[in-house]
Image (cartoon, rainbow, N blue to C red; front, side, top):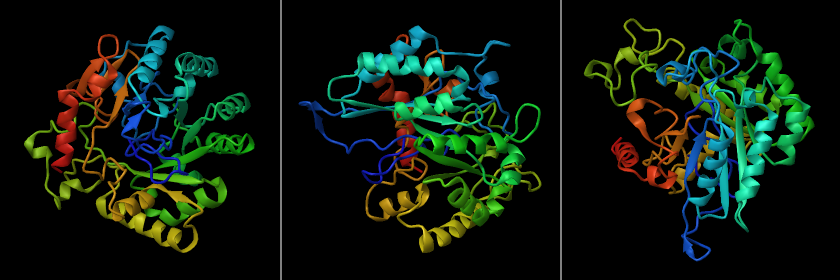
Length: 376
């Protein structure tokens, strides 16, 4: 989970294609006379089911890996949903509790489902505690009614968009192979129309990495994104079936190994991945534009997080921090995993049917992931 940069900012999830969380209240050691306790779960009430078919998506394959029932869309039922919301609230002791709803595509569950979410939250909301929600979406199903609800309930929306039409449509297509750019831009107009808080999430792949300035200016000038998150797409070819840290010896190349270059002969990386040099050049190009024209006007997560680290604080990006394993992921059946990039059987740490979220968050299996991140 991403920690706050400053009290007037909104924050994102890192290194995911579904990523955002909101700015929590400042941490405190005590709250209401007791030790403050916070945790974060990325809830996926529809699992990996999605209405589009992005070629680089790291989560669609979970439908096979986790053995979803054939021809049946998973959905967290009302009983499970209420139990999760109640428990998530009960195990925390903090001025603000943040719920994150992702997928797959969570808006496929329909507006009534999210209206029920808000009802359950109000039912169990402790006195004096703020409850906030963020929702990651591809935007294709948003309409006026959705945006009215999101505005009325102060949701923070994370909108996935990869840049101008040609770049966006290269990999973000529907099931028929057609680009989704026009639908996403329609969602942008709706979000502005209804004054819904939103942020953009842009995946940096082998194509978008070569067009950094065009993408940044498009997001700034046409989408008018107040906050931008750029995520490097980096996956080994074995990611659909092989869990992280369980690779064979020959799949663990050292820095400089040419097998890490996407598209290279004998590469172990997916061809749509961004290379290390391309990712670095992408950030440098955007930084040069941002630092000259947009400091204080446009929030770029990566830059502000780096500044925080430069100031001597822990880097809030989990991929760059010395501490990982702080955010859990939950599937529709209640199975809980150490991270949404670790949703593999090897990293399942329990199920909310019979395990408490706080116990799972600080379980031996979860701590192993934290310790492993500190050894990087």
